[in-house]
Amino acid sequence: MNRGKILSIRLVGDPILKKKCKKLNIDDVKAGKYQDLFKDLKETLLFNTNTYGLAAPQLGYALRVIVINAKKEKITYNDAQDIPLTIMINPIWKNLDEEIDEQFEACASVPEIVGKVKRYKNIEINYYNEKGTLLKRKVNGFFARLIQHECDHLDGIVFLNRVEKDFSTKEMIKKYNLRKSSD
Image 1 (cartoon, rainbow, N blue to C red):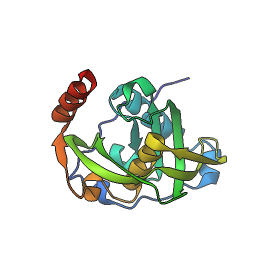
Image 2 (spheres, rainbow, N blue to C red; image 1 turned 135 degrees about the horizontal axis):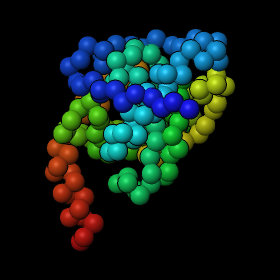
Image 3 (spheres, one colour; image 1 turned 90 degrees about the vertical axis):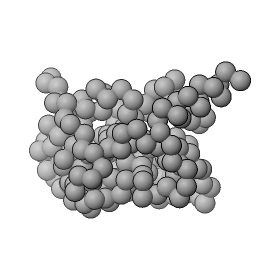
């Protein structure tokens, strides 16, 4: 099996990050048309070890595809869980209740800056997998936050657009988290 290519991640200011992305034709997915894109998304995510998700526009494709992957021990959120390497095609989510959580978020397209973003804690996600099968899952906590963040990219939104207050740098957050855990 050949591996995908590691692609450059587009940075905030790149026009593609402001575009509303196009849905993939599921018959084309079933026929294997997008397999190289899926491999490139996975390989680029795995190469960027401090990144838990990427959306196709971050790699230069205005298509409705995200990839997620996270190991619980690397995540600083309290409600983190292992998230297997997953491609989500044409994802659509909805909140299951009104419970909101506000946490700092970072993004591979916005180096060095983090900001507090409010997200729903409990969502349902509908998406197609790489074989074109429709799947539905209920997720919560960090998993739900990650999906909402990556789906925002598909609508031309970066997390900076959602921050109401409290920006910081990744370096300061790291120092704060380290100091907090040693108290």
